Structure formats: C-alpha cells, structure tokens
Image (tube, rainbow, N blue to C red; front, side, top):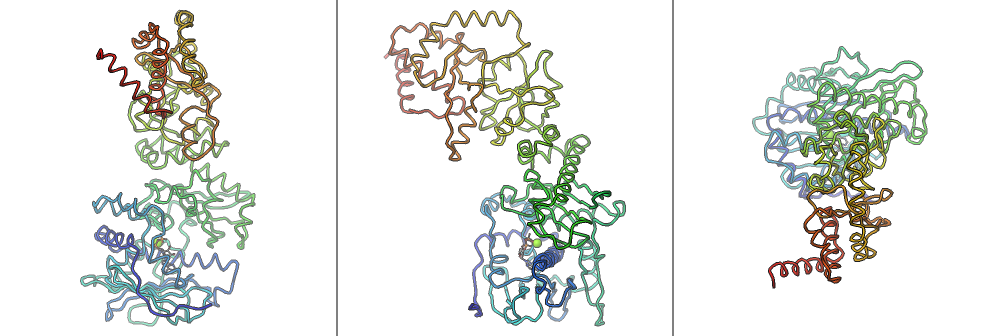
Length: 626
Ligand code: ADP
Ligand code: MG
C-alpha cells in the first residue's frame, strides 16, 4: 500500500466554506460551546474505539484507559483538546472535516434565515460541531492517528477556516486526536484554567470518561468532570440542565430536547433507558441510512450506536441511551439482531415513548403541537409499521378537518368521534395531494351541507395510513370519494326515497352519458354528494382511489388503474343543459368535458389536454353566438 505522505493544500467544499461563515456568525454569542463540541467529539471517538476493539483488541495498543485532556498554553495562545480514541486516517480527515457528505446540504443552507439566534439552532441540528472551533480560533490544527495504523501514519490537518486546509503526514506515537486551537485576538479568557474548568463542568460534566487537566503549576493530573454515567444516577439527583446537556451530546444537537423519559427497569431483565425527543426534526430524519439514535451500553460500557434494533423506524427521531445489565459485553450486531432480550427492551422502550407522548398531549397540548409539527409525519408510519401499538398511535394522530378548516393538524380522532352527529357511525376523510385540494374537494359538498365533519388528509403517508387504520373506536374510516355514498342513519327515509326517484327519473340520460364516455368510466350514476358542482369522480369501494394511484405511479410502480365512476348532479344547470342536447356529436363532446373537469378538479391529469382546451374554446364561441 502506498501512503500519500506529501503535504498538500486542499480547498474546502463550497458548502463547508458557507457553513463556516454561518457557524462563526451565529455562535458568536455562545462561543464557549466550542469546548463542549470538541469534548463531545473526543468522547464519540472513544466510543468508536471501544466498539471496534470488541472485534480487535489490538486496537488498544496496550492503553485501555480512555480519557480526554484539555490543556492550554499562555505563551503559544493555544487551547488543546486531546483524546486517545479511534483517531482518523488521512482519508477520514478529508471526509470528516473537509467535506460535508450530507445529502441536502444545499437545501439546508437555503433554509437559513440570517437571523443569528434562529440559525444557531438550525446549525446545531445540522451537526457541525467541529467547526465551532473557528468561533474562537483563527487557526486550528488537528493531529491525529487512527488506532491500528503505525506511528508514521499520523496526519496533520491545518486550516485558518477561510477556504482551504493543508494536510501532511506526520509521526504520531500515541493514537487518537489532538485539536489545537490558536485563539483569535481578544479570546484570552480561555487561557485560564479556572475558566476552562468551569466550562467543562457546565457542559461536559456528564461525559462518561475522565476529562483531565494539569493542576496549576504542577505536573499532576486532575479529573475535572464527574465522569460517571448520568443515566445511572438516581433521577431526583439529576438537574434538568444536566439532562439537557447530556442530550446535546448524544443527540448531536445544540438545542435542548422537547421532552425525555428516564427509567430504571428491574426484575427479570434489568436495564436503564434515558430517551429524548428532540425539539426539532433532525436534519437527516428522511435519510433512511442514518443510524444515529440510541446508544447501547452494557453495564456503563458503550457498545454501539444503533438506531435500528433499539427503536422502530417510525420512532427514529428518538435519541438517548439504553444500558443493559444482562447482555454480554461482547455482543455483536449480528447477535443483537436476534436477541430476545433486545426485542423485549425495544418493545418496552416503544411503550415508554408512546407513554411520554400521551402524557405531553394531555398535559401540555401546546408542546404536543410542536411535536406534531416536527414529527407527526414520521409517527404516522407507526400505524403501518407497528400493528401491536396501532390503537395507541391512532390516538396520538392529529389531522386537519373541515371543522377547523385550517392547515394546522390539530384534530384527534377522539375529538372527531366526540363531535360526531347523533346518527353518524363512520369517520369520514378525504385524501388529496395538497391541503388546498383536500379542502376544496367537491366530494365534501354534501358533508358541508349537512355539517358532517370530514378529515382532510394531504400527506403522502396518509394513503398508507388509511389502508391500515380502517377503524377507530369501533367506527370505520370511510373515504368520501369511494364507493356509493351511504350516510346511513344520517339520512331520513324520505331522503332515500327521493334519491331513488331521482335515479329512476334520470336513468335514460345517465345511460346516454355512459355510452358517450365509452371505456373511460366504469359507471355513471346520479350523485348524492354534490350541491354546487356538476360532476365528480369516485372510486369503486374496492379500488385504491385516484390519489394513491397517482402517488404509486409517480414513484414508478406499475399499478392496475381502476376506472373511475362519474357521478353527475342532475340539479346543476350545466347538466340540465346537457340533458336537452339532441345533437349526438355535441352530447358526446359535452359529456367528455364533464368528465375532464371532474378529473381536473380532483387533481388528475387529462389524457388529451389539448382536446379539452379545444372543446372549451368551442363552447365559448357557441356562447358568444359565433
Ligand atoms: P458530528 O460530531 O455531529 O458528527 P462534528 O462536526 O462534531 O459532527 O464532527 C465531524 C466528524 O469529524 C465526526 O463525525 C468524526 O467523524 C470526526 N471527528 C471530529 N473530532 C474527532 C475526534 N476527536 N476523533 C475522531 N474523529 C473526529
Ligand atoms: Mg460532534
């Protein structure tokens, strides 16, 4: 293997340059957190070493006492954070601190507002802790050597944070990483042992490793932090701020969490869980490959970062630790996958999180609104993914509805059921691809007329949601755009009789329309749904429905397209006009127009848009008497 040893100067990726500027600007008021971030990284590096050493003990190189050192030099005006963790190879340095390999970085940068306080939070959620060093330093040097590589394969990374960095290969006897900050002018406050100690205690007390500093004027080490597992301490001794600082470390977040739950489980299986719900959607929530989530410990020893086995995908936003007293210390990922003990811990932890959410929704509805806005879409996946907890999850769902008519999703199924009409026995909903389309759907006309509430569903996941959530509180969920409209007991006998009569009365006309439309429709019938619109399309009760068909087609799936049913409103003047049309060719044209506009209004695409426009123009000309 040839090792690239020369010194080279590389440019930062454009995104890194932009981010650096933003980090420096937005964190300026809070600059002491650079130390928290560097210590957090050092602690992660120690965890990674422990994990890799499970499979290869040699990585310890005879030094198993993992620790973090904070040092400063008044003369050189430097602050240095060192660890004997995993270290980095030359290419890892380039990948980890010269590049931001996160998909969507550009979008993220665009989302920044320029408002420093707001951006500081966003930056935190994006996870760029290392760059916070440049808030206090105008030059940063990283000297690192990956565990397992020879001392001649150390790397020095050096940058003024302006656009480029240099890399060179160095000798480094000890594995791990030293981050050396050359302080900016005016940042001398950090060249002070007391000040540094107090920052460490304030932000990093919970770090599980000793953070050591030299005792002033002596060649003697002193551990500055408590260096014990926070989660293992009794609940009542832990302050809220301590919980929050610990979260910032495990959650790689700059902002305090929305809520947390801390439990010690005793009995057949013993473990501690400390689980957090972030205040904001983590940047990589939609990146299915991200693994950050729950850290697994066994008897206070870090084992691995693993989101998959300890939390189901629909709770992938949960952060925290689970510390088992029973699992073997050398548990591997493979064993973990099949472990019954892990399954039980996971099932119990899911219940804890759901319980926490239930609690918030009851005791602090405003906070729940925040939660729902950030994570509602993900939680909805749970209805599909977790049948065992479906009912509990269903209670946590929130929707828009015709009752509130606002895009804010704040109606629970319980709210809906409590407001149901006296004889109503179904929960009605409409799905569409936007809130506006749902709200303005013609299928809602009769429901508005009769003041029956309808849930307005407009997120993609909703289509899956309703295929799995067919019932709530013994009431079935019913799409307003599917099947024959049956309002059940909500309609009087007289209503129904009148409906039958209308159907009979217009049978001939309906058949004529059906013939005119040929194989475009499965059926044509007189509607009950419409008040102000002339026509609408509905799906057969067994079909998936137009919105779901469109979603599946858009992601490249081959779906059997169900033919729609055209329902027409015989009370509408346009339809009346059509009825009296004797000219067969015209009748056909107009029937197609009726169909096309019904298709358009529910968000569908016309087979022949130009033909539609042509027919429309013809109609204008006729009206104008030309
Ligand atoms: P995050 O910690 O959220 O991943 P950072 O910006 O803090 O983001 O760090 C970027 C990456 O640089 C880390 O993920 C890690 O791979 C690497 N890194 C930073 N500090 C160290 C260190 N002390 N030892 C090993 N790797 C490190
Ligand atoms: Mg970090």
